[in-house]
Amino acid sequence: MRRIGFIFFTVVVLATLVKLGMWQMSRAQEKESLSVALKYRGEQTYFSLASLPGDPRWYRLTLRGRFDHRQAVLLDNQLYRGQAGYHLLYPFAAEDGWVLVNLGWIAAPTYRDQIPVLPEHHGEMRITGVIAPASTLPELAATVPEQLGAGGPLRVQNLDPVELGEMMGLALQPWVLQIEPDSPVALQQTWTPVVMGPHKHYAYAAQWFLMALAIGVAAWWWLRRSKG
Image 1 (cartoon, rainbow, N blue to C red):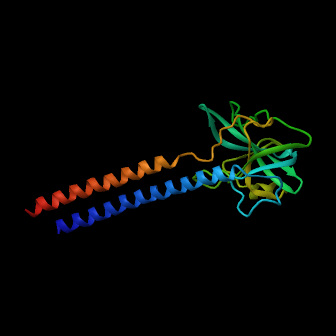
Image 2: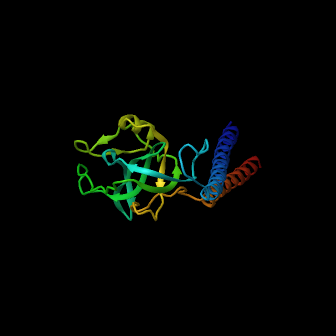
């Protein structure tokens, strides 16, 4: 009975480790596909919302229009060189629709109830950026946008352009335009499309597979020894 229990436990552990290794392999392949898409799509620029393909992620987009500074959005929990801050986003009124534009990182004041000094850029302008999915982070509980002060910016933990658009009364696109770093309106750029490259996922997969191999060899040795 003890032998059967040991075999069953070993099989479960091996199956779990192999499954984790395969998951890391699939994540690495996803990152490789993303890198290819970033390179290919990043070389193509569109000049209107109407001309975008069905899946516009990672394409470059150039628009003319105006920022709406009355409805700023502060994406919380953004660190830069160890300093707490926000990503500042403004709705941008283009000729054929509204887009939420991420201008970059801005330092947070000392106290949570204080509002940072937000830059404003008035008049019609031309902006270029990369179309990216809205940033999402794990949350222990659902949170709602918090307005700082009377008529102040909205502080959010995650970006949901559709939900924010409903609150603002604007038909925002379901993605975010990440401003190009050399734009005159860009703040400190900390956004990156790929946090971890595929090579790290391959390394993690190798670790899981090696652990499975080591446990398998150890189990085989124990079973052979106990049999004798």
